[in-house]
Length: 126
Image (tube, rainbow, N blue to C red; front, top):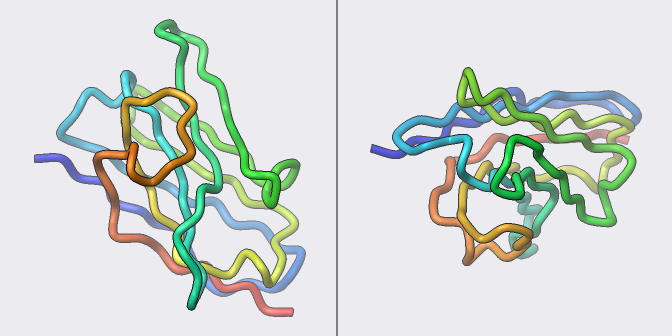
């Protein structure tokens, strides 16, 4: 049974940092693209970042313009865990953050991700 479980969300002030974690199980983690999406109140779910390999051992990161330079993804394939380090947080980053897994390299579309976690709330106060 596939499971993705996010953790690490919370309430912080603008300029602070948070690190989200996504614990994965039930699939071959190293072979999957891992992504972070977010959904703010009243808005559609949007792509934030992803990590994928080019059929090798090197992993590449992709970031939405809104988070580029502030957010960093990483993954530990020995622990089947995916991370999102979020620095210089802004009130506009307030959202529920979802971890997702898929097989289409380079995709930023939610429909291309097969598995989803339940999300973790990140709230950034000004």
